[in-house]
Each structure stands twice: as C-alpha cells, then as structure tokens.
Length: 388
Image 1 (cartoon, rainbow, N blue to C red):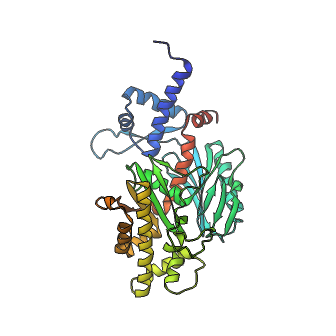
Image 2 (image 1 turned 135 degrees about the horizontal axis):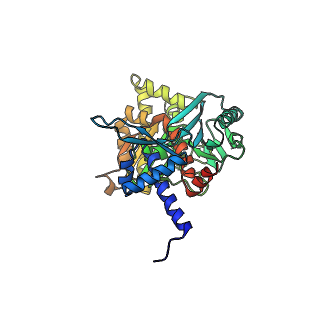
Image 3 (image 1 turned 30 degrees about the vertical axis):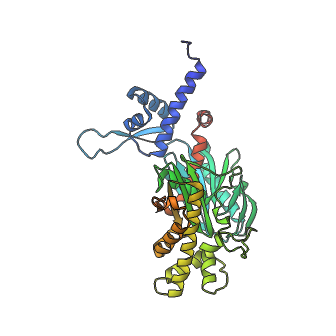
C-alpha cells in the first residue's frame, strides 16, 4: 500500500476534527464518549482530536454532573476564546443584535424597536462594529435574518416594512463575511435541526406573520433555490386571483391567511399592520362569532395550502410558527378540514404530522447562527481560524 501523503493525512485529521466540531455544535455539552460513539471513533482518536481542538481554541471540556456517584464525565463545550458569529435579526417592528458561540449559546444581545425604514441599518451596523471591536478576529461572520425576500445580501422586497432592493452591506465590518437570509427560512432551518422537526429527514416549515414564509429542509440543509429566495410559499397562487398582492402577483396565498384576510372577512379596511390586526381578531374570536368565523376561514385556507405543499414536496413532518400556531389553537377543526381536503387520497391515511414550533421566536436567530457556523465548520473555515 502506498504511503499516505502529508496532505491526505492532514485532510483525514481535519475531517475528524470537523466531524467532532459539527457534532458538538448540534449537541451542545455532549460528552466525549457520546461524540466518539456517534461518529464511530475509537476512544484514543476522540481523545487525540479533542486535544487538538482544545489547543486550537475551538473546544474545551467542562465538568458535567452525572446525577450519580463518581467523578463527573467532562462535557465538550465552546472554547472561551473560540469563534463567534454576530446575528442581526430584523422583524417588522423590532431588531436584535446577538453574539453566538459554537453550540448556539447566545453570549450577548441587545434589542430594540424600529420605525420600519432602512435607516435602522446604520444603528445596527454600529452595534455590530462594537462587537467587532470587542471580540476582534474571534468574530468570524455576520448573519442577518430579515422579514422579507432575499437575494444574496439584498432585501429584494419586504412588504411589511416597505423595503425594496435594500442592500445590507452596512452591517458588514471590514473583512468580515456577511450572510443574509429570510427569517422564516432560517427559522425552518433551526426547527428542522433543533426543534420539532429534529430527527426527520424532510421537514417543511411554515410561518405566518405578514403572509406565509418558510423553507423545505432536506437532511438538515435548506432547499433555498438558485439565489437564496426559495421558500416564498406565500406567493403561490392559492388565493383569489382578483386580489393584487404587494409583490406584483395576483391570488397569492399570503392574502388568505393573515390579518388582511381577516379584515376582509369582517368588512374592514386593509390593516396597516396585518400582524397586529390578526392578533386582535384571534384574541376576539373567544367571544365574538364574527371574529371566530374570520379566524376559521384563515385557518382553513392555511390548511389547504399545507395540503397542496405536502402533495408536491412530500415532507415527513410540517412544522408551524408565528400566527400559524395561533390559528391551529383557535380553529383546529377548520385547519384539519382544509388540510385533509387538499391531500391526495392515498396520503390521507397517514398524512405528514403538523406540529407547532418548539423554538418559537428564537427560531430565526438560531437558524441565522447555524447558517453562519455552516460556513465556518469547513476545512477552509478551520484553516482561516488557525491563521487568526
């Protein structure tokens, strides 16, 4: 057998280190023995790899209580001087800027409200710059999640905020990579990996805020299209073709499931803030029959769309967040009826389960951090870290 080259030996060693890092990122505070067992490593190999990762300021070990007698088994944790990512979470009315370490723990965060104009990017850029000044080269990337349609680092449109073709480059410190994703898509990524969809190979995530967003996640990877704009399910023509959507298309599903649909059902003018308006109608449905009917109609429309997507995408599970979970809670029969009626006959005996999110409002931030660490936990990323 030919002698292994120095390059191939390094490649094998880096692959082992990557496997351990990815395992610890996905399973925070896992024990070394757990990682070795899951990855098929010998005890000696796991010890050697862990030693190298500790020396590289990537992992450390901390005592973990066993719940019984004897010496606690050490847990693998992020190194105190290890890599960090900054997450900028921009929703329709609020913002957060957080610093996240390997494993997903939020090290620090700040939050506030905004008026909806792109001017907020200057303030958010200042917050990121402060983190960059504090942590230096430990801050390896900035990952932004936005309530809008994204292509590259540009928000093509965010109807709820009135944004169109807004470049998020002001969030990028010099020399630092910037990633931008749709908040619903990133929430779906997190839900598939760490939430209600964990352990399922194909997960469809949907959220309702102002319209419907989401993502299909296969083997832990988002199917986000050629430009990153995949998952705009709300702009599929599941609605009334006579209705014009702010996106420019007609008959969008968006217009059937949020506060705009409920306002129409109640004979009201289109709300300025569909998210808040929907919340008020859902709250009123407890005692107001008209509000209850409006909520049931939105839930039925949501269920029909879920059924159509289940037919087309064949998910193992469907996870819901945002107002979608409120619609399920208030009008479960209407949603179930709509869902079942849209399913192909052969699917009805064992339809994909529809589950509420377990991550809730932390989903977009968690997914954005995971997307950033996906770019760091590579051979290229480790090589760059070793030179930092």
